[in-house]
Each structure stands twice: as structure tokens, then as C-alpha cells.
Length: 78
Image 1: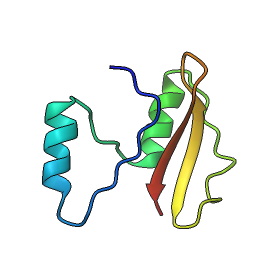
Image 2: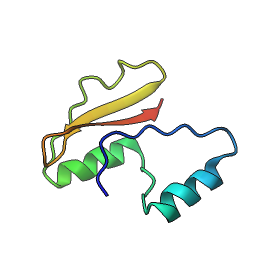
Image 3: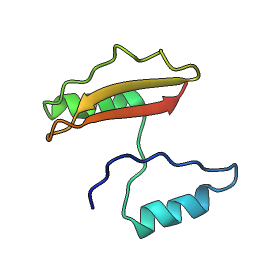
């Protein structure tokens, strides 16, 4: 599967259905803590850009280019 952009909305109480669809159905894994993901990418040789970490109210994020040069935003609620 190749993804271009994904943004998922999940209402309160919808976690079970979302996990079933995205996890079991599509085989996607849930993201861990933002710092853990950044550390894991760094260990694999992917430099993480934290310059916009606190520029989106209520969230923290970082950016990284994937192996094909696509800009990827990793975002989590603050």
C-alpha cells in the first residue's frame, strides 16, 4: 500500500472501531510517543526537523523527508 496523505478523525468512543479498521483491516500500527518515534528515525539515519514543534496550537510535531523525498509530518496532541 502507498499513502499520500492521511488524516483520520475519531470521535470519543470510536477507538475500537478505528483500531479494527486501520490496525486489523489495513495492517497499520499505532504511533508511539513523539520523542520515541523521532529517536527511532534518528537511529535509522533519518534526521528529524523539530523547528515547527510548537507552531500549531494544541499539538507538537516534527517533519522528516522519507526515502523518496516526501515531506512527512508526525503530529500529536500536546
